[in-house]
Length: 177
Image (cartoon, rainbow, N blue to C red; front, side):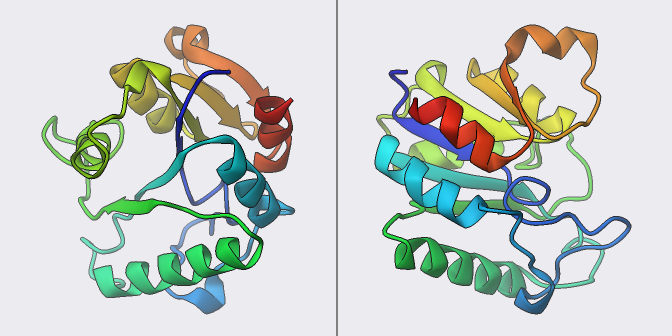
């Protein structure tokens, strides 16, 4: 695969999603099995890895942007301990996508990433996510997508899904082979 940039959703892909709640602080962050090792391996395959995560709990006043930054700092530190790196972690604090927000499926986080890395070619990038909004985000930008988990995807998104994986670890195996 010739992709240089990998975009990865966080909750439900890297860490366990808290159903009916939000990961508000590091003590609630629970790595999914081998997700940290998968990210470290993927960082040796891709030139850049960018986390893109919707965090509507900020808009709801349940936690702050600083709380998310602290979680991302610890996540990135852990990947560094394993010999890998995450180049950028972006988050959308909005309640809903409106066509001009950072919130997936809108492309705001991808466009912000392009400001950091002008050489991004979205059509040669990959998006890994677990929700329809992740696949739509990738589709809007022309990325190839990998779905993690069992979430039912709308029929119109199926053609954009390159691979279905049970976990980030399995997705990494597919991408690195």
